[in-house]
Image 1 (tube, rainbow, N blue to C red):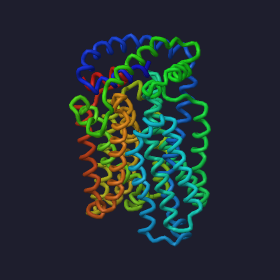
Image 2: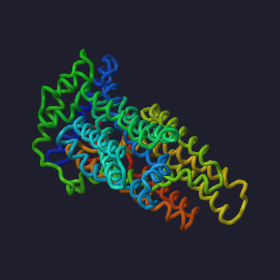
Image 3: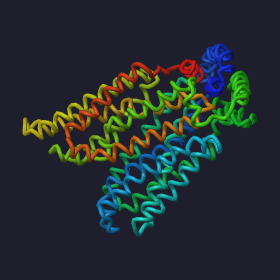
Length: 484
């Protein structure tokens, strides 16, 4: 059902003459489908949906492994390869440039070769990148490897949540899509922990493991039925839908509705980047881009990349603080997967943004006290509390929910190009924040956190005024409401 629904609402957006008369019909279909899908979700085995999600989120774990690699290996790589600080900084930051390139191309790749094909492409780049890092004897090959893994990250960051959203029943879609963020956090944490005991070349080889599992697992899971329907492979579409809903599930209604909607889609022109700024799509684009802007410019990558330095600057233990940080991130993200389909997307975003403001204010106060030699005994406690509140709040909502909403709000006919834009904005923000963080801290340590607090406060207003609640709604219902 979710499949049909996505296609239905998705195509309307391309032509207002077509979308207006279809809007009511699609709403009726979606309402009927709710009952049908709940029945199939209850009566049919969903093991293939869970298994497909497991395979896909190996890409998310790989994402985390790439992101977490540079933190524990800095000293060893610099010593072994005689790199200057500037050369290692290039190695660390070039990851985000690769991810931006991956983001630009991810939607087109996923639309051209399918969701599984895009995941294979990303895994291939990561495999090549890790091998280049392992065999590197100088900065050039090291950077090429890092760039390649970054490209794979950029593709994974788009295609994994989209694939999960397109195969999952609506009652599980939020939780399963959130597993994406959980596995990213797990990959980062595992890389950090085992990086303290493994040599940097060996650590690079561990990055091959999730890629290998992913590539092997892709042979045993179906392609996204929505994508198969979109490109006209009807027999494969029905087989994939049947596989995901269970061999005894009746998919005839759902399949027929999807194909009817695809016929409407075929009458509409191909979406281009400029089409996203047409009036009928503008709200979806503003929501998707806006959430990514607030997610990144709220300071997460600056704080994440330099957690140890922040703790040391505040006079507390970097090791204890960072390990606590990693554990909290994984635990709270895990809890979030059970909450997102119960409490809803919007409440989690509001609670998360409020917590981010509080964490930034506490950290800012600690550095203000330190800079002015006031209550110095309280500085370490305030700094650690602030950072831990910050990462807990981020993991509770702002980390995962924007990706869930991104996978839900765009009609399928613009999902590729819109997803590329949103992912590009996300990676540009990641680069901008990580690049400017040290400069901002040099300018004013407490001022940096107050700036992030102000941005996160603005995020609260953005969520209240513009972001819809998508919990328990079909993809068609979500997209019709936004783009009406």
